[in-house]
Image (cartoon, rainbow, N blue to C red):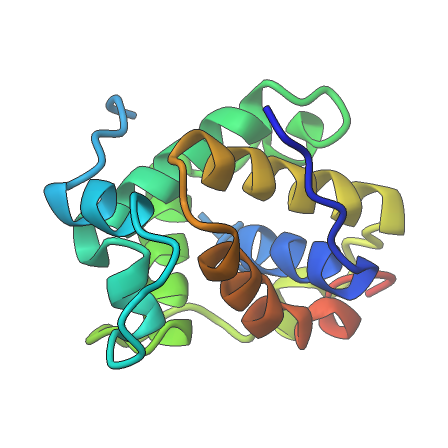
Amino acid sequence: MNTVNYPMIFKLAVLCLVISACSTTSKPVPSERTASVASHENLDTALTLYDQLGGKDGLSALSEQFIKEIASDDRIRPRFVKTDISRFHRVMQEHMCELTDGPCEYSGDSVKTIHGGMNIRSGEFNAMVQALMRAMDSLVLPITTQNQLLERLAVFQPDVVGQ
């Protein structure tokens, strides 16, 4: 597996997504759209990020793989012991869908509200980013698509770390 060294702000953004759905599995099966998009590095500029991620099926596969990555990481798994994983999965998909210009509406609380009082450390945030990166890599998403998602998540970092 090739590791990509993303700027720290992008790494921090990913944790925001995961933890934003915290107030919450079957095997991930990428859709034909995900496989098709993942096999092309030069994506049509008319595609939304939602489309590039594989739409509803792609986001479902990504969130399921992300949950598996979280569960296998001793650095962050303890944060999710009391989490309703099914709700977490649903809300995470909604949040990613809305952030990527998909047809969904996020029904969860604000990122800042969700993380208030959690005192999340930078190391935990970075571990979440790494888990998302592993999930995206396992689904063979193009690096450009991964970077776009991380960029959109980066703005949430201040609302997560140290709250």
